[in-house]
Length: 365
Image (cartoon, rainbow, N blue to C red):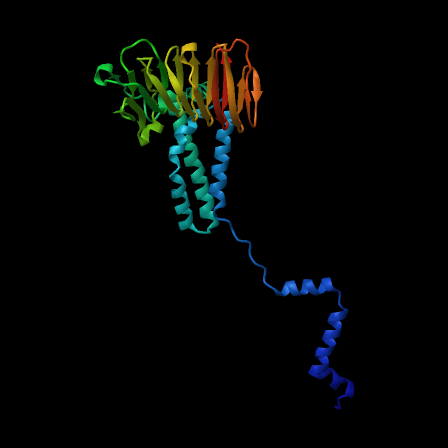
């Protein structure tokens, strides 16, 4: 059968290509894009294998902060939890081994959250009385009876730096690095440079002293060295320091971690007082005979109350973050500087304040 001239033209490859080009130009542009995308394979969405563990840790930390702000758990708990930071490397390493397997990562994320909450519960049950009372009153479980580590056995000892052991002392510099526990600092009459009464759980802490004399200056150092298992323990240390020889010019540096302290000085000749407060609480009561030349206060999440005589005016430089500062009933925020002008003031005290999330209260006593 004869083929027409028109059919032969349709079979010509060059003519077919030309017709396709013309049809493509006339076709709507959106339709061309949809057809092109249909021919390409869709790229699968990558699975973020780091998401589960990080998400559960953030949720756990948020729940813990909520319990802090509502008063169920004390802020002091954080000073013990920070010792768990090496677990971050453990979690990171396990996630690298697991890879991008969605099921295993989900299971590991749940396991991470359980371990995090388990350790937080252990720390709270061992160290936080307010948490124990809340669980006992609201849930009916007495955590004191089921604590994995019972109350520690205490060691009591006295430490004295005698005046007769060091001659020609004109000044002293004292540095106290204090962890969890209760502390008192006083300046009762004594001929000794320092008298200390210690009560501590030797199984969990090992206090260390250092005493050096150099050209008439006596340097005294004290540190509560906490052992790694201490954050699981149920114990509370007590340290009492009395500074004799109040006529000796004294520089005092106190680093308070998560403890509760009271500083009551009436006559101690203080040149400079440095306070570094992490998550602890301290009250500083200074009499008219114990006003320093300068006070530096650095507060993280802790609280400090400074009690001063009525006739001491203040020269204050401050930098306040999320926390707060209140002086003589007036609240301050941000950063700034001011000088009081009090009638009948006999002395001006310079104070430099840095507050993170904690608070400082200055009042008259």
